[in-house]
Length: 78
Image 1 (tube, rainbow, N blue to C red):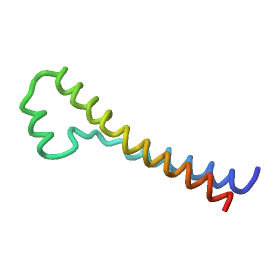
Image 2: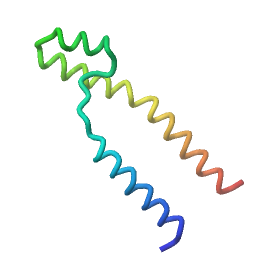
Image 3: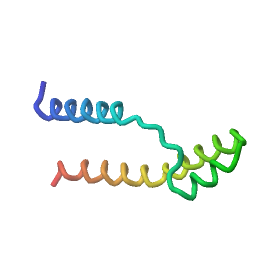
């Protein structure tokens, strides 16, 4: 196995281990969100709120990954 592939494999395994070990439950993202969610007893609203937070995460993560892929691709050419 190539050393670069070995390094990638080790990093992936470490990332998965960190995610699995740090699986604490988060009620809300900030104190204002927590206050608004604890005052509501409607579970559908809470579920939709959490989905909305995930939807708002998609653009920044996509931009970051795109920039990383482009930089990685052109780094090997330069």
